Length: 380
Image 1: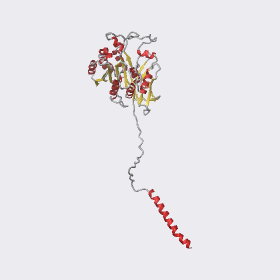
Image 2: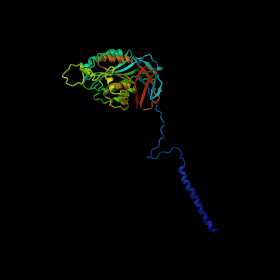
Image 3: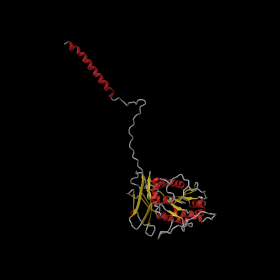
């Protein structure tokens, strides 16, 4: 009995200590009343950010020219005759027009010393540009380039002002910053009213009268064309001929050796074709459409000999060389005729979130017709 009585207090003490220990362990686990203040030096964990859905709205406009087997432009088609695919996916045409959408145009003229003999002819083109190309509701600006880029006239609808400015284009120096000048023209056109589904913008045209030569530009051709495509700018170019310029200049001790007479080719033409610089390039296996797509995808300056042709093809325009019986005035007249017989199709691509190069394919439901449109565009 003495032993059991002696053990009872000890057991009570042990049980009491156990109860106190459990209480001490559970106490920190209890939720505090009110918000817990952060300890100094400890970063407060923020809640996960809300998922944001980025919606990019892109309205793609592509000029389309349709010819029959005789080379004549076809102007009696409707929207139902056309099918447009973007990366192989058929798109819904949201705007359709035949040559009546008003024009916003930048006229870009080379004034380098190499084409100095052609300046008198260039200065006479003002009335052709206002009457044949712009039409009654168009607007235009004038840029010139050589070693420098000069904005001689901002956008205006005053035809007399534009014609007088073109008539007084000054001669420049020996440089030719073609790509830099193109970049300025694209930037100017990109600032014109944006196109929407409800209201199409004016057609943005960059018309270049120059050699296909660039000297000293910081801009890269491919990057300029990417921006032109995204801004729905179409490039038309009139290739000024250095050979023609030389023929119009009085000879002053030219000791260079020419393999063929100036303005001629060193081999006969392909049977049944008219011999031009462009047909000679095609004959040598130069695929300018592939070159245009490559330039856009890589944004480099590897394409040099055919810069104006590539720029026109990449944006759905046309390049017209001046040679033999095609004068500068005739080339401009042909551009005006095309612009007013040109279909303008617009659509919102179904995969506008997909970056990279997008292929555009425009077809018509008649097998006897040939369609020309821009090959695509690049989304960054």
